[in-house]
Length: 51
Image (cartoon, rainbow, N blue to C red; front, side, top):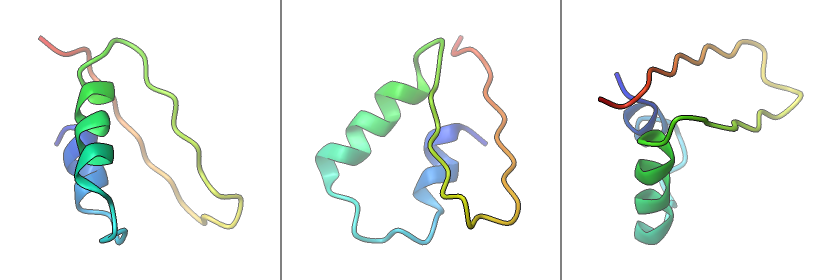
């Protein structure tokens, strides 16, 4: 599962289409910065370099 897919499956249903496009572009880049709320109990992130 790509980072974009993981974000797309997240509970945030109000993501604008342009933000979703930006998410895909970020997922295709070599480095990804992910901001996580402090109250998140468990976070698992795997990023592989786009081929």
